[in-house]
Length: 399
Image 1 (cartoon, rainbow, N blue to C red):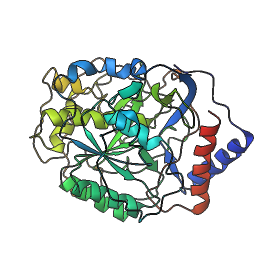
Image 2 (image 1 turned 90 degrees about the vertical axis):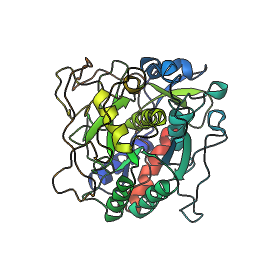
Image 3 (image 1 turned 45 degrees about the horizontal axis):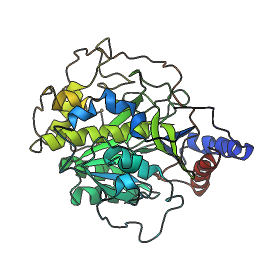
Image 4 (image 1 turned 90 degrees about the horizontal axis):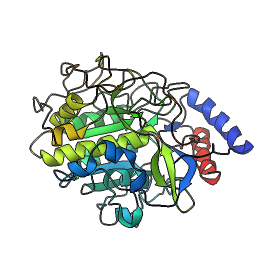
């Protein structure tokens, strides 16, 4: 997997510089995924290294995510993809019939497949292949995203996957209200931290919001990637490097990297645990994942790179570890001044499990491309929105 670095046209470079400037001003949304130029023609499963590392085949004998609905707030999801046939639930169009610009990209489809793909016809094998996906097409603006969160909660989703992030100077009141609502109903929310950890390392929402589980990315060596955005917001980490996906605008499969992928895998991990323990609350599922996560070698948690560690659902499903604890106490600390209805819990234990943390990882497998832009959460100026989507489309065309 992997290959030569992706080519960037001079026009794309100019757009990237413009978008970077706008991002610094907090005016457009950052994405949390990137695609690499290396392609391969065989089935995806043989390249999904993390499924083997996570002992997926053994876990599937205990749980495959059955009975759990995962809402995916993202671009339009293609339910005709072989691995997603029969995996999508019907949902409303809260965009009032208006398709957002760029909503036909494959990002949402890839996230859904990583969570619940069946692997049919050599496609992506999801970590929770019997979970169901509630597809919610994103749209610019915190108000619409918050409506989707509420819709997901009211329509049976136990988990909400948000593989995107927006640079915000403060929390959107609509988003804070929606996150509080989901917390009050016991719904787990996972969000990508971002992919500029080796550059600006910008804090983005919803990953920065109390009540949301922020996910960073690790590579094949279970080492934090150099580009995974880090900081006190990181709660957990998951595989996010050298992940197969369908190539944009072409046939075959590509290698990809990003905290988007890590977030989808974390969401699927929660689905596996919740399916095996349907009587647990979301707080208990999250606490079990935190307690059994692979900790930094020095045992210091939380880490600004791995949070409380790398998700290991097998420890809950196969080794029966992880005390679920109290049913209605959110297991992540509440930052001072956070306006949240959820209560904070003491920090989990810090027993080391042997996974090594490094603050400067080696080159990631597969050459990454510029970030794709996704729907925003806050006020987004038109120029920033246009630049963001232009980058995504140019990226796909030069792969």
